Length: 184
Length: 173
Image (cartoon, rainbow over all chains, first blue to last red; front, side):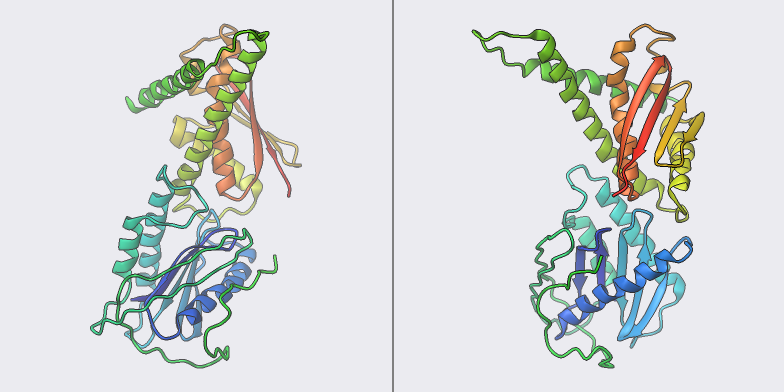
């Protein structure tokens, strides 16, 4: 039931990001990016086992940080039936398991984009499937601290559900296609 | 019961494999003064680096798997204790015997009966070859720490087999 899934490395650049195509793709990417600040806040407070934090702008935003400082962020559509805490936790667990498998792959260099088909397949199974297929492709550049230029293109054709926008951030149209430099 | 022996044998083969391939890759250039001692030392250094890098990558993957279900670490000392207890137990089926620190970023892990060396000798014999067999484990520790966000340098010293000490120097950025 996820609308967007992202895996962020410890230097705060994305290793993997994928969302259901809608009109305002970049909106998700921006949300994920701004959520990192909140995640960082939570980490620096006294540590608990898992950071499970909720943000209510459009849909719900869930975060999870591993011991190796890799963050998983998931945007969930709220117009559907409300997802229980357990389901979210189990989805993050599955993500973590798949990420561990990718890490143990000797052909994967830590810090690269995740290109594993198995990982892709697992994320696909978590995303929404809907009836009207609509194809769209987004190219998106990100410059993290490590100065990695990364283009993510969505190849899967998936339908989309309308998402309510509260306009809290005043997002109008596509942002400049660069993740702003993080302050640290 | 048998899986300890499996890793031990694989590790020994790995070390001899790396050294053998280095030997075969040696290019003898006629006409130049060929200082065999110096060359050997260089080759030795290269092999040890290769083994350490292997250990590094393996350490990164292993740590990811082991810390999947553990609680978040509070600080550096907590991480070192985890390495000494859980990590060492999972890899070598025993804990580190002694952990010392000067609280300024230097930790010394002492293992009195290091699994990879017990079969080799019980004293001073073959001491000069011991460093080859410790390189992989140094890399293992370094890789594990790096994935947990700690940059470090790990060295090992042996005074009398099978006891050995791993010294971890944390680098503050």
